[in-house]
Length: 406
Ligand SMILES: NC(=O)c1ccc[n+]([C@@H]2O[C@H](COP(=O)([O-])OP(=O)(O)OC[C@H]3O[C@@H](n4cnc5c(N)ncnc54)[C@H](OP(=O)(O)O)[C@@H]3O)[C@@H](O)[C@H]2O)c1
Image 1 (cartoon, rainbow, N blue to C red):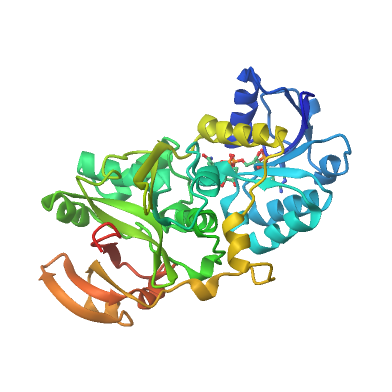
Image 2 (tube, rainbow, N blue to C red):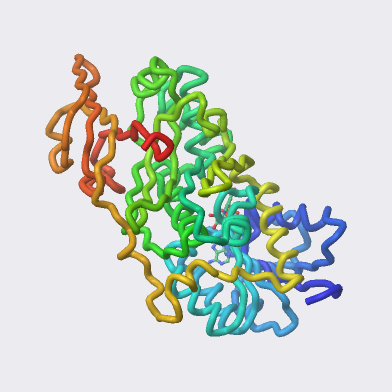
């Protein structure tokens, strides 16, 4: 692709799709035209001419005049069908669908190689923060040792408001839902699945390691109470939901959980809907990227940047992944993930029976009162998997330390 106008086939015209439409219209430098938009609901009113829209994915996939497919729908299974079909047609694809990417990464990688087509997805992690291309290109050597990030704007918004307004979780969540900062079904955000998918993508581009969502621990903020905020505040700390990945003994630790962070931590002041990612290299030391992690225009602008990158034939080179697999077909990297290690955590619970199954190595602090109990203990991370996605459990776990202290 060169100076000619780029023809785009767009899937989805919701929050991000409309954001892309707006930023594209205001872009001076990129000559691009949305040819057709595939959406789901034919009864919905649209803010642009109805002639743009179709309800059949083949109406777009069968066209032979398109340069790029942009996939911005909220259905991961359908998105995978669209993206696979487009890559198999030899088309370059831009997506922001972290769930679809994380769940199907290996297959999507193979399709890119087989069809010599690009799939790029800057908007899928960190919203407007240009983190994926930076990890892929700038930190392209073996010296990157860790990343840790606030990757979900909804959780960070809830945690910030709970702390800054001294209010309970349910009150802030309901308010966030009514003013559009949280989904009506917030489970994927608050139970840290959204952060999990993004963490999996950052792990690929940081270390060349491909993991499946079920292999990686994700604990969310759904059970947090104001007592936990008070505990943090009394110690001069803030609670942040962090996705992290770091090297350890030839393998990798990758997990998602709430963390207490100190005032001196760059991520302490990343509040409300902002995201922040800190990367650390052997010689570059710590560097932090901060920006809007979601939203119509911020995410639309990340998608626009990907479309623009395709005009100079950009694709992820996956240098770290290719180096790791060294010409073999062994793309999956689960054998490099180490979940069997001890971690210092705060666990708040009602009844000690709720802790059954958690491998507690040592307890350094124990508090009991009529309405709240907690321990600060060293536990085996693998044993915390019993809490992953567990809707029955009311236990709240928060890491006492992140890699900066260990
Ligand atoms: N919102 C954000 O800030 C943000 C940030 C980063 C990444 N993302 C990702 O971007 C993607 C889109 O998110 P969004 O917030 O824009 O979602 P959204 O506002 O819910 O819009 C979803 C769009 O997808 C369309 N759609 C759903 N199923 C479809 C199907 N089977 N065929 C064709 N179209 C279909 C919907 O059609 P109708 O209009 O007919 O309902 C709608 O236009 C998701 O993968 C999300 O994770 C979002």
